[in-house]
Image (cartoon, rainbow, N blue to C red; front, side, top):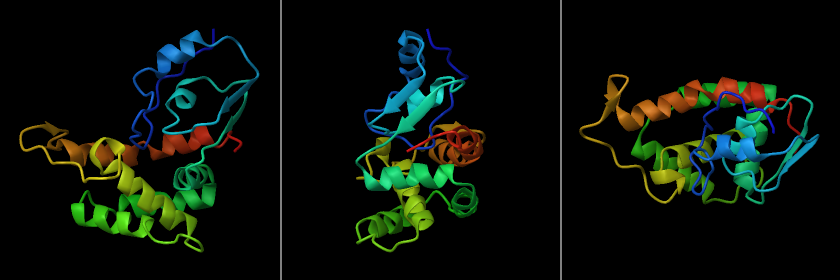
Length: 171
């Protein structure tokens, strides 16, 4: 069986993702030297498995998603992306602006700006579906603030750990 790591929380919500099943899926894997993830999505399984001694390749047909993971992996792009994300509030207006950018022709768009818009659009939407801004809870709090705002800030806080894990990746 393949050893699991402490489960890393993916920075994006992905509809149909395997976040809650990842450790069980990894436990069923036989020892291997190559791991291919053709449908990257939120990378929940990949982020849950130990990469030691394994050649890993991931890909996805969704260009915005593939760009997002490439920006998170690249050192220079990641630093710019993280600064941009840290300066971004949890806001329906910001989400709408990000979604408007994603609906334009992205040819020639800065990959970091594209990744930022994707991150905001996905992370601040209901269930990561990118079709509606997530409704704000009026009664639930976490870390002394609105639950959704806390989840947004938590996703940003976890970017560095995911970046470190992605540096070994081939795409």
